Image (cartoon, rainbow, N blue to C red; front, side):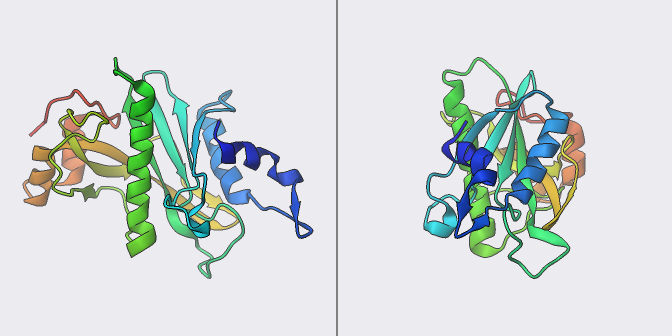
Length: 222
């Protein structure tokens, strides 16, 4: 459990300037996670010590990681409006999305380091949204030209991502607006180049991969 997670769980009883802190957006994500993972009340949680709005470098307030048996399921908190409604857009909450990712469990040299590495990558992707307004929709790809693996040791064939609607988290209609869950799936350099060169589309590649769980050891399907 992260520092902010501990604070959040007690925040309903904390008053600042005579106002109760509103965490309805955060709670809506939590409730959806409880539906999917009943009994996992205290998942791994990685919080930003200094929030973006206070000058911190990480745009996401936190990332929770749920144990799904064969894989770890990551979900972000911070691209939607977690607290009070601040935007004028009544239909969407913040940027209208949160990110998810599923990492296959394996005999990693350091599993905790691999989990933290993914958290770092999700923060980097979210930074694109915060700094340039980039919105990530399902069935897109993220290719930067990187040829080294996205794993902490940079030895995997997985170098970038495709996106789909998360297969477990459903769209939320919160008090602050709609939130979609965009799932990132690891892709190899040759797969990403095939997408870039329009040799196939993301839906076709996803079908060829045959799983939404990222496996650092899988071979390219193109």
